Length: 351
Ligand code: NAD
Image (cartoon, rainbow, N blue to C red; front, top):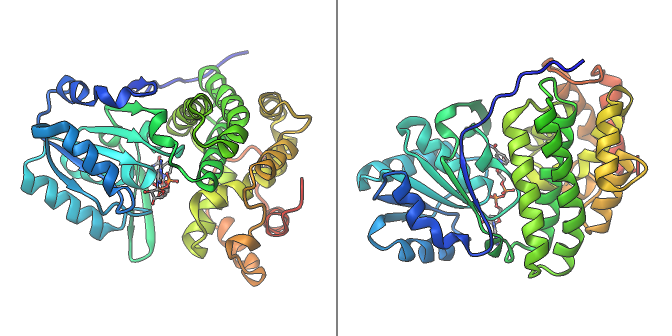
């Protein structure tokens, strides 16, 4: 019998090729007039073009967004927003840039307009992260959820093939874990399954023809659904493991998600048959875990933790850290089980 809680997250989404043109009216819609534009150094040019397009509505460009939001960068951006008298932030970029906007909103409540250029999904979540002295702290706060998100697939055509593949697999991971989440509910599960389908069918084409706008559009649509899934229900084993591997062993975010996902899925398969059926159906595969592995392989994405720089000698310590704090997972977490999972991911064995 159905029994669930469904909490909607309030945000406005504008989707479509060329929709970036609507940014000025979307800023106005929020009653804002002084936008601080944020980007990474690598996407400074995109930030500058955007700021120029906003004319007097842009009061500045802060181009120092960096992975995992170092506290020093967050503080510098907060001061810049204050100094310029900004009344909103426009974040153009991936999860790192959206993360910087969230760090500003956390202390100032400045509204965020997000313009995502990867498939990370942070723009749909109230989750913030800050890194201080090598330790990342995360939390949930309604103030950091972007008010408006403009998804323009034209901005994703420059995303390199490898980042497209791994960022897409990262988004699929949000969908997979949503299907067996403790708070799973019919609406989010519907979105999660469709997110996997949209990403799995479009990513092979995206990697082959990065300029294919139809494929880019489908992938971005899937990423939107993945973002909603991540923001709406709790994540489990897969996300905790990736957090451990990224935080303690400095492995790259999206690539780690790509390598671990088939193995975390295989681990949970016996305890979540309905979720596995839906993942496999969305992939058009016989098996959820095998289908995820085959998809990653077909995209030319890395398949082993070894390829990401993990040392065989660190696997024991990784297993120890991963079982330290208890959390919800459909299948009980055992040290032996996690050690085996890590070994398979290290070697890239097809589950
Ligand atoms: P990213 O934002 O770090 O971007 C990676 C690199 O690609 C950057 O140099 C960026 O400028 C560049 N780039 C981005 N889009 C591009 C494009 N279209 N064309 C060319 N270059 C482009 O990578 P990411 O994977 O989007 O984000 C990862 C970060 O986001 C991690 O810190 C992760 O923890 C965080 N994250 C947070 C949430 C959340 O809900 N809070 C969700 C997902 C990810």
